[in-house]
Every structure is written in C-alpha cells, then in structure tokens.
Length: 348
Image 1: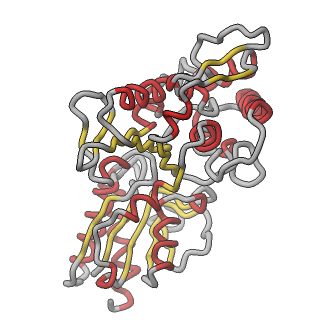
Image 2: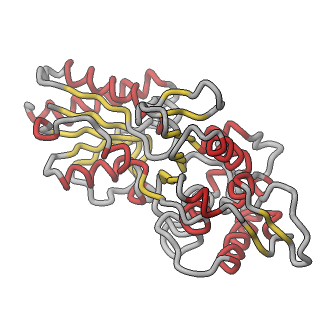
Image 3: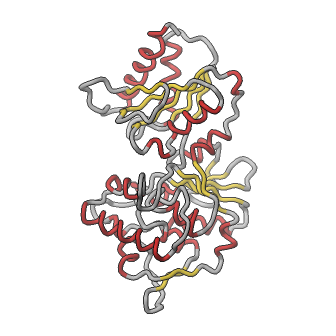
C-alpha cells in the first residue's frame, strides 16, 4: 500500500486535491497496488476535517468529533487572514479576542468535555492575550484600571501591566492546543518573530511586536513551553499562561489515522513550501518523523523547496527557472509530473 498524506499546497490546492492528484499520477504510471489518501493538517486550516469532525449546528465555526463531546475550533476561522482587512487593520491593532469568546461559548454550553484548538493560520501577534480576554481574563494598567479594549500588540505596549483570571483552573482542564509549529516566543532560534512579516508587519510594526512579546515575558516570567511562539504567541497563552496541554497538531492527526501500517510500503507527503519553518513541526516534518518511527520510507514533495532539513527523499514541483504556479490546474500538472518522474523513472 502507498499512503498519501499531504497538507494543502496553500494558494492552489487543498490537502484532498493534492492527494487525489498524486493518486492519479500513481495510477497513470502503472501502480496497481492499494492506495490510501488521507488529508493532513497541522493545526491550521483543515484540521477539523482531517480529524473527521463535522460542523456544529448551534455554534458557528465550531466542529464536533464523532461521539459529540469533543469540539474542534480552528483559530484561522476567527483570526485568520480572511477575518481582517489588511489595508485598514494594522497588525498592531488586531486581536485574538473573538477566538477566546468562541471557545468560552463552547465551554459554557456544557456539551463538550474537551475543546481542541487548532493553532495555525492566524493573522494576529498579540501573544494570545486577546484570546485569554475573550475566555474571561481581566487586564489592568499600571494604575489598576481595567483595560476594556480587546488586547492587541499596541494595547499591550501602551497599557497592559497585569492579568487576573479567576476561572483559569476550570478552563485549563478542558482545553488542548494543536500547534502547527514548535517555536519560542521571541528567540533564540525559530520564534514568533519569524512569522510576523507574512502577517503584514513592516519594519516599524516588527519592533513594536518584539517589544510587546518581551513585555509579556516580563509579566509572566518562568519556564516556557515548546509552543510559545506558535501563531503570534497564541501557543504562549494556551500552553504557558493558561497551563493547558499543547501538542503538535500534525502528530495528533497522524496518531488518529485508521490505517494498518504493516501494509504501508511508502508514504508520500507534501505541502506548498518546504523551508526553515517546516522543521518546526509542519506536516512534512511530522510525516517524516512518523515514517522513521515505523520504518516506512517517505517521499516528500514541496511546491517549492528552499532547504532540506534532512529528509530522506525530498523533491520540488518547480523545475529550475519556473515560477510558482498561478492556477490549481498548473499546480496539479506539476505535482503529477513530479510523482511520475520521481517514482516511475525507478521502475517502481
């Protein structure tokens, strides 16, 4: 059996579309064995679907796993790029408040024993303080006055001095974060600051965000978690401040695959870009670790490959001199071409 376990190729193909393109290439190349296609996700868009969750009928943006007592909330649904007008909403004024409010509504409904929060695809960099505020935390300034505005990097720098959260013990028992990356809050190594430019931060905003995150570390001193830097510090709020479990989203999805691994002879994985961020826990990295743990060869495919973190077989769909694909059909063509050339040139 060949197991196809791809993430989305962002901007062109969903995880399912990428998987089906690879299936067609395998069949077109003459492979007649069993093929299993699973849509992967790492805590970002598509995590609920990858886990088999269905949209909840009562709470918008909330999905429910089979059994009905575990909810999945993707942060990208509430604080992703599509939720903000980048032309008018500066990153310094964006808050993760709406995510916290939704999670609180799900908890207060009394229907769920656990809430899985997909930490990925956010456009915020507020250290998760807005999320905590929406969940019920209270923030005060240096004079002890309540800060009523949704917490943002700008508000953190200008007003935040302390936080209180009377119900924190209750909420932490029911929340688990599924993170798309392992990163520190502000460094060294891969950190939240590595992601702020893609959220729209310019040089001026970058310095203020760095200062805001450093201020949070002063307010909440102590041992950090492996996921503090995930999605503008949302991991910091969940794993460190709230004290709830936070784990690799891709690892969690892989652990719930209903596949007989003894039958798998090859795993094919892929995503839009394989770069410095990939080794922080993205799907391609998680699948490679999964393959090594189960002694299964892995072929990794990147829409583009900037660097190889040491994966056994890694190829790019872009030939030398080519530009990124401009349409889904072009992305499909390149993906199928890559599979055929990589696998069937070896007379698989």
